[in-house]
Length: 282
View 1 (cartoon, helix red, strand yellow):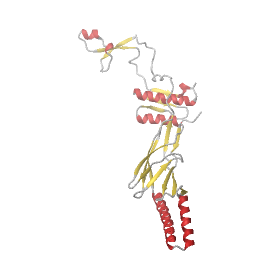
View 2 (view 1 turned 45 degrees about the vertical axis):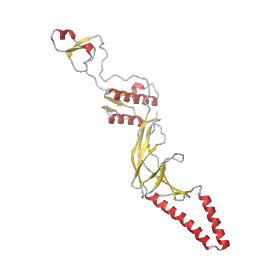
View 3 (view 1 turned 120 degrees about the horizontal axis):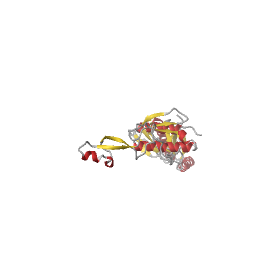
View 4 (view 1 turned 90 degrees about the horizontal axis):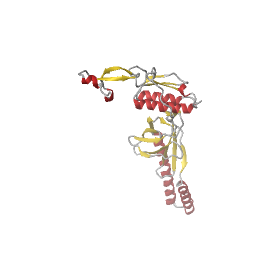
């Protein structure tokens, strides 16, 4: 793989000193001056060759790449392996500050990913930098990573959650529908105390449509058709988090993809947010 060589600021004084030594040694026929000049030059060349070997033998492995919401800091975790005593600097851009790490048996490095908008992205190439022992030159190598990650739309919006599928709102809270056996967690205000006072079993009152079965909440993009596309996706992301927080199963319907069936939990949440991230722009 190609390497780039760049001179460090210290290289120019070193080259000037070397030129002065060689010219002076030639003018005064000084064998000691020639020896010292060639010794300095050989030391610099050997250091450059050793640095090149270390950089070429450096192995990079991606351990983990974050997915998250827009404007949320995302990080990439790498493992670097090199020869004993190798020191390397890693960065994504010219202006980013990489961390110098020793890597005798492998070391982990965590870097911040460049900010990206909503969507699916590939982690950018990593720039690896090594300097020779004298600090005269630096060698650079670009390492492709190719790991995929998702940037989800930022959850926002004030629309209420859609009602559960099959939910019937016709029954009012004041409509008494019957009694049922007491279950732990039932409100004490709904216990039928008169039946208990007459020696009966503990029962609770039911009102409205409480006993009517209903399905999961269907988070349908069509309910938000009056909003711009990005606003719809942000509202859907907020609904997903609200359902997860309440422990309510939910399904997701988007106009660009097959619907996500009913589910709940971390894996289902990830699938839903990835669908939102992959949604094409309006």
